[in-house]
Amino acid sequence: MSRHSYANSFCRYSIVLIALIVLAGWPRAVGASPCKADGQACRTNQSCCGAVCVNSAPPGKRPFGACCTPTTCAPAQCGLIADGSCPDMLNCGDCPSGEICDAGTCATCAECGAGCSPGVPCCSGTICDAGTCVACAESGAGCGLGVPCCSGQACNGGVCP
Image (cartoon, rainbow, N blue to C red; front, side):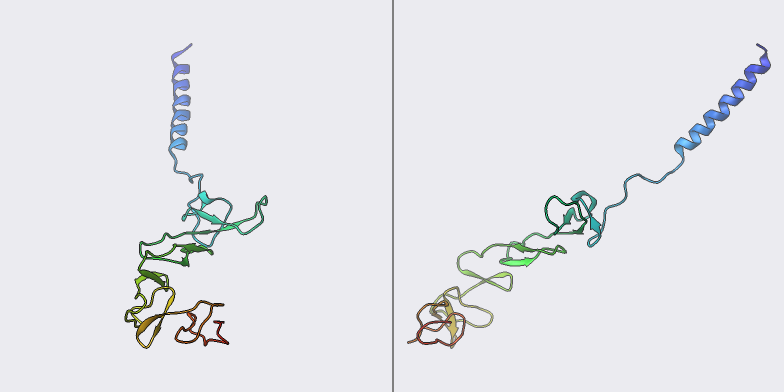
């Protein structure tokens, strides 16, 4: 072979090598798309930014759901609260003894015979009557003669409605 064919081969291979390096290092779109925001259609929890894909369709189907971000209960929360942007409710449970669930937050309550006010509600089984917590009757139980109905409704024939 002549010296001329080695030079031509080197030149051709150099151009191919440079082209491969440029193409391999060229920026291109990433294969995976970013996560889906709350309210967007989804099929799996992994596709959602909030990590929850809520689906109300019957089991065995593969319809789209909706992404949402759930919440957690704070230490003083109780009862049912909204579950973040998810459509269901979150049960935060009951309050410790001596407290009552008032609008989703545990609050100190007044026992029977203690003073009560809008800021200090009566504990379960009692009702605020003229500034004092008194025993009360639940729905269907006997009432009257100083025992009001816990619901605040009037006693009807000796039984709370």
